[in-house]
Image 1 (cartoon, rainbow, N blue to C red):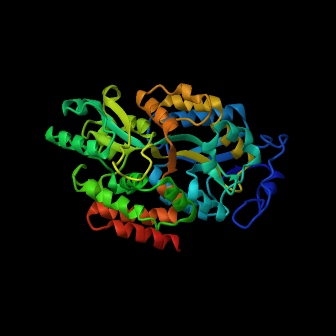
Image 2: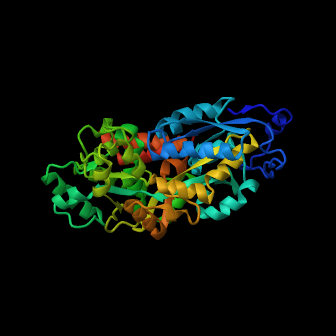
Image 3: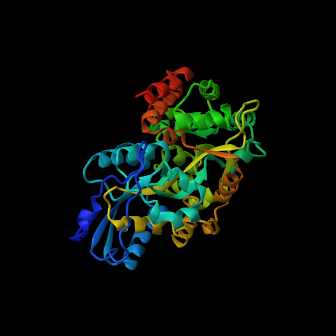
Length: 435
């Protein structure tokens, strides 16, 4: 979607045979000579998911302006799109077209493998060696067959955000560390006429994340790795995850009409309920801190009561209790995007920009040293828990790819709606994997 005003460079951008996918052994895309970079005017289109007015959206606008100030030949046009709409609707349609955005949100994993196999992404291995070295192992999620197709700017694990004041009023002395303790906390919160947990099942994935965490507790790390690598869901632990989820739903921990509640970005959403004192807990990733600020009516009050704790363990379950579900946000360049797209991508993960991102309080940075910019107490808790996790499993819908992921999420939400079963979730996953 770049507006390219350069003359001789246009043909060089239309290279083919540059992706390394299964069965291929090609090299990689050749980086543009430094003498060609920033020589002619270029307009880059950038799609990101900081769609709500707030520090995240404002910061990305500043970053784009700063890059253009450094490189006057580059203009960046931004479109901010809500995550679910971006990931499931807008981006897939744009990639199918002949005019995708130049740089866009990318989540890695099986989803990225599908995009690489469809020849949508620019391979950036050689151009980003320094950045990958600085980021470390987190960058591997944005690799396919050892080749780099994107870079993360945020990485962290999921957990339960909670209202410390509501916990204290209900006589809950400390955050639960087991599901038995979580169930006890739910009972105490109900006794004070408080909705224990808000969930946005209307957007599907927030509800599905409860099943993901049950799978993390029911399955061994080996079973989880095998499922991600082979799309093999034969291990009975996946049915057990659904059984544990149904048992938890039967305790009625969620708000009325949760099946129609959106996940985020609105005062009536699940995170709006937590942000405005309408519910005591919400399961969500590290980005939730920034999103909560965009939907609260009182930021100071929110900051005073907000806390976070890891997803509790399930006693007697074979899963590693210190394993965590997590992932990040990153960006990729479209295959035929100008070379300046890669330079902007590298700029986004530079230590200075990463430190500034950390200071927004909207998520945890990936560049070494940038964590010094994290000031929020809840985000610091997530930072500590992330570093202490024995294993971090990528979001399952991302790890398994969109075909399996969408079928899985639909089947999980059916359990929430009362017309699904644990067995049907696994059957849907297997059927989708066979396509």
